[in-house]
Amino acid sequence: MSDLRLHPFALMGGLTAEDLWVILDIGIFNWILMALLPKWGKTAKLSLIFPILHSTLYSLTFLSLLLFPKEGFEPHPDANFFTLKGLVVLYTDPSIVFGGIVRSIVGDQLLGRWIVLDSQERGASIMFHVLAVVPCLLLTMLFGPFGWLIYFALVRNFLDDPKKSPAAKEKKN
Image 1 (tube, helix red, strand yellow):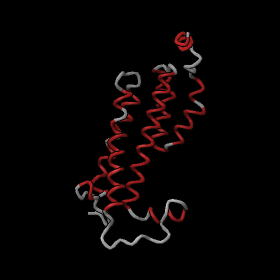
Image 2 (cartoon, one colour; image 1 turned 90 degrees about the horizontal axis):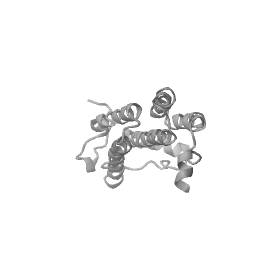
Image 3 (cartoon, helix red, strand yellow; image 1 turned 135 degrees about the horizontal axis):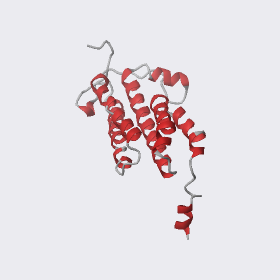
Image 4 (cartoon, helix red, strand yellow; image 1 turned 45 degrees about the horizontal axis):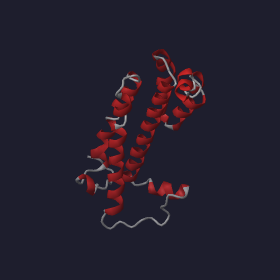
């Protein structure tokens, strides 16, 4: 049993962040799909399943906290989204931390998806994918925008610009 004071999420049947934590772990399948099957025709669509699932989880978490506050809940006067101090106060609540982590996971998965789709549009070979794109996916999974920045600023420069490719010029004419 956890010693955290967790708020049951009313819109999720009274489950708590600890109960729902396992749902976050299934997102690893999205990263595996993007790393191992970048050229598969269904990867683009299937790689949206987990961001949609986690976005739904985030939305229900947020709405539960907003619409069904803890009994006797009095917001801290310094809690807000506009200052560092206000955010630190908000993040003392484990249920809000859970929501923040879910939000980060969604963003990271969508960044990873963009990396894969962009690299495929630019004609990345399987070897390039393994040696350059997969490390960026790993960095994105672990550190979010840092992995995307490495891809965008460094790795992407070694791929063709689809707007300047012969195929793109043929489509124009």
